[in-house]
Image (cartoon, rainbow, N blue to C red; front, side):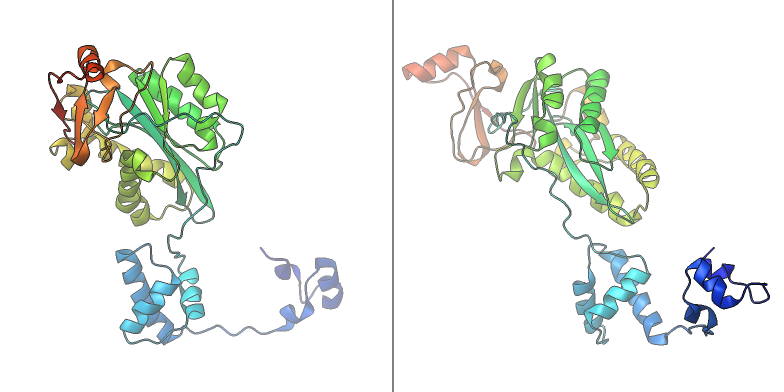
Length: 335
């Protein structure tokens, strides 16, 4: 109910006095609003916009103007914005940066370049992405097992505080044990003592992406692409409740039904349960040797060009130091 509806024609108080008491402009009460007939041109444009947005939900007003011109309709950007706004449509423009580093938090080195991942729970990684709702953003954090590509845990929040990331981590460890190495970017949520403290308490080796190296955490980046293009963009969630229900269904599908080419068209659940058929590696194309004191022997490696990785045991490491030929080598598996 609007305040204008409070104004009565036959009330004992004059309409002028009623408008003063209700803080309503008299002109809005006296005006006889004629019903606005729909513009036939707008209806045609809305139909075209709706069809194109369904095909390309990332289109904003600029690209929509170009599309409409190709269809023979000269439309300026303001009109396209007005029509899209009235239809509740918006392009998927870049959102807020989710990886700001804290100057006082410790940053750990990246430990996984050129390292073959050959078993479940060898390497986990995490990241945060934004999801646009009808108003504002929601933030999604997920933890994935590199070997099986299984999403082990996830949470959504309307703030960027570390608490929901810590909750996601503790849930993953409670359900699946703990990883040997945990990788993240250098965002404040993951460098915070609340988050790293859980990993240090469980004696998990911490790894963090290098600055400007998105491929260091490529498996989570691929997950975000799948989540958004296969679910979020298609459904256009309006509220946190809708998003929670939708993502619950999608991650059940992603883990249990969606075939992954990198897993030989198996599902992440099947590979995780059988502990066979998975694998991953971030290729060290420059062949830089990683000397990582304290890292498990299975994770020490030397990289060679074009994706080959030599995994060394103690005797081979000694041979490398003395100049003797190594006894064996292993090429990268599934990626």
